[in-house]
Length: 184
Image (cartoon, rainbow, N blue to C red; front, top):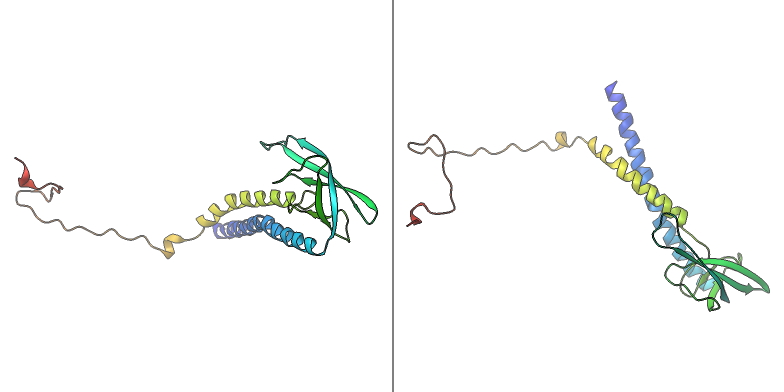
């Protein structure tokens, strides 16, 4: 019965490591996809000018620094839209005009001239990435403990030192960095 529970524990550890790795990979994949979308939107989007209508700063729960969001107002095909953009690297002043490229299929989707996409994208994936890291930290040690390293790599046996017999000694040799006859 010990063998069966050990197999289930190993399988569970392997599954946790795979799930944790997938969750940790998700934010990176999402960022690459958003970068590709941003490039495509700049190439195929409708150019427009947005005006920063408002900025809202919230102290962010478990974060140490506050979170600031800009609210943009822009016009596409005769309709006025409002959308939010997070202040990640750049935060423009209220009333400032910003060049944007709007998705013709979804006018609420745009990219700014400072390479920020509309809305707050990737937050959920970032949270899942943190969860994946925690799962890996928890699951990897039990998985590594199940690998039979001792069987595959047996410990080396220590070499035996030969002890030269010393007349009048009991098999003990004094080793010193200093020469015996150098004292005056």
